[in-house]
Amino acid sequence: MTKLVICNWKMNGSVQLVDSFISSLPQSNDSCWNLVIAMPHVFLSYVNSKSPRFKLAAQDCSIYGGFGARTGEISADILASIGVEYIIVGHSERRAHGDDVESVYAKMENAVRCNITPILCVSDDYESQITNRTEELLRRRRDAVILAYEPVSAIGTGVTPSIDDIRETITRLRSRYGVNSIAYGGSVTSDNAQDVMGINGISGALVGGASLKLRELSAILNPREFI
Ligand code: 13P
Image (cartoon, rainbow, N blue to C red):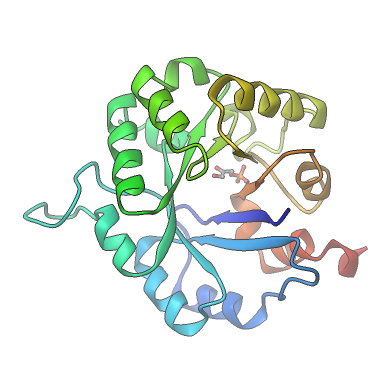
């Protein structure tokens, strides 16, 4: 199965950094992964025009769909028009700053309507983050959504759950919500990426801090070259 390495750059980056990534990132050796780039919105078209081999992701989208007088908002429809294939929704860093379950649902619904795969982030309190409506959407679109298990305690801390714990939670999420694709995020680095990506049934990993360091990301993608 081809797994996704989803690089969440968060509020980081520059044109210079984007350029160095495009020119230096290794190609997949054996197509065991697909690289998904979740850079800030402003870089996405630029990346696509320079190197269409990357899959584009947005880190968020508006709760509003379509087009119109919504100053500062970026809709899933606009993101679809530039070739975005994935949108991260409900990241804990956004939930901490105001995204509630209803707005996360609205973003997810807009992504699905635009044929974009939402990557719905949940933490250990996923039962309270996934409302009945969200669950219904997850089940209805089970092949077109990704659920991302991102324990808040692991994000940016260097402290991850054990591989067994991640495997167990992923299995629990799959049987509870029926979603086919489940990814993990939280302090994934070149030290643990092989173990994380090797978990049976995992669809990929969201990589935050390590995805901003070219050498680190290269080691995650092609570990054999760095042994
Ligand atoms: P870190 O890899 O920096 O812990 O961030 C993970 C994350 O938030 C991915 O969405």
